[in-house]
Image (tube, rainbow, N blue to C red; front, side, top):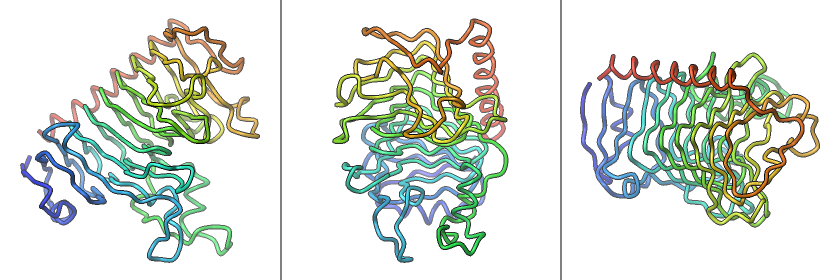
Length: 328
């Protein structure tokens, strides 16, 4: 694997675009003010310090794009990854907008690849911090420009970002993810291991950590194992662990610690929908200082189910280790 060492003075996007082989890029401390798209496979970004090596940009959904339309959620990312087998370590990816109620969604990291790994990474934004592709099928049609219906968008999302056939396995190990509304969302099979999910204050006085949109065909959705759901300014009992962005969205929460900002109901059905009949939300071993009263449509995991999730987690980690070893 090739090795590069970069500083904030370097044109990282040009360097990324010119790569022709698997590469590890070491980033010196500092703030990298740029909007990045990693298109090549097997690129590894490693920061010098997760708190002082920062990739930052400030696009937002209601901003007007050069094509005359709004950015919409999915063009607001600070860092987009479409290359397969890429990883991030020991750095921060931030969308620096701080008023989602006013400016709309503001993605920090968008991962649109079959296999991805992040370790010791901070993801910082407010609404929609982390997008875990694939897109729901209906959004692929809506954003691709396939129809003449003016209610649909005219292909403004690049196909490399929108079209990702098959599933995605993503692993986030010991990461800190900040946000207030739907700040982890998408359709990936994603494992959050020993992460800290930090709910920021929001002038709307409510919050949601995860917004899954998994297909019913997916066995695994989001798995949060050994995670801490922490208050970063959110009001007491104002934040839900998850709400389903689409029918059949799936989340499992295992041995997680909940702060006082988490609602005792744990889950929300998503506005005026019937997704309480289709959402697949389950938990086991939750630890909270306040009594919990989970909604009736969620489930407690059995010992066998927890063991099965553990095996699938181990399989995902082994998949990543084998891939990483191949390109070491």
